[in-house]
Amino acid sequence: MTDDTAGRALSKLHIGAFNCGIEGWINTDITTHLWIARVPFAARALHLAGLLSDARYAEHRQGKFAGLRYMDLTKPLPFADGSLSAVFSAHVFEHLFPDEVERLAREIARVLAPGGVCRIVVPDMERIVALYDPVAPQAFLKGVFEIERRSEVAFAHHWGYTRASLATLFRAAGCSETHTRAYREGVCPDIDRLDNRPDESIFFEAIK
Image (cartoon, rainbow, N blue to C red; front, side, top):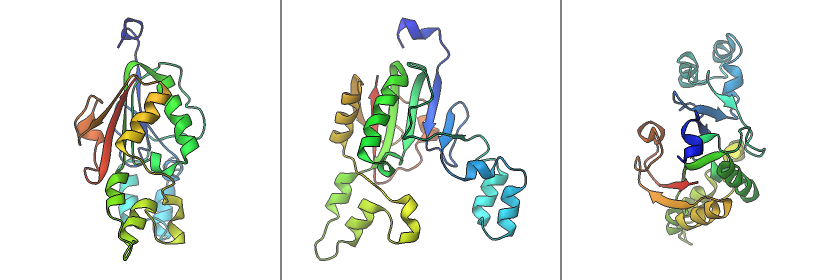
């Protein structure tokens, strides 16, 4: 960090934390489970009614969603300029539209302090493209869209990324360095706890 940020207490932002929030970070998401967690006995009632699976109810009992903060990524990030030392996001960018991601990348660059790091994990579009077979394109299409039926539409992918396109995106947003990393390798803090999807992903870091 530069001298003007060295004496400040900087926060760390976890985008799309869902049930993987960790201590010491601002863990954010838009999942309905964060609202369920705020209403006493709501998770139990939903579980008894058959609307919450055993596994998800167990996560509520463990407090997995209790610390989540709601944050709409299509809006400006609710943080001051240069107030964050790190931003982490895993398998979120592909669920946004390209114009939304461009704005989000600029917002991340804005809120990062000089020298701050943003670590992004996304599906590897080059790997997905390599799956294409004109005789049997199902694996390719599943990799692109992630879903196969209308009931899953909320989880659909809207865009895809390569190492080069991520570098272009964050350079344009104002970051000074971009690096392709490996699983649990890089300069992002708490990487051993944040990275939890080792397969079929790009691991990317941008430095302000």
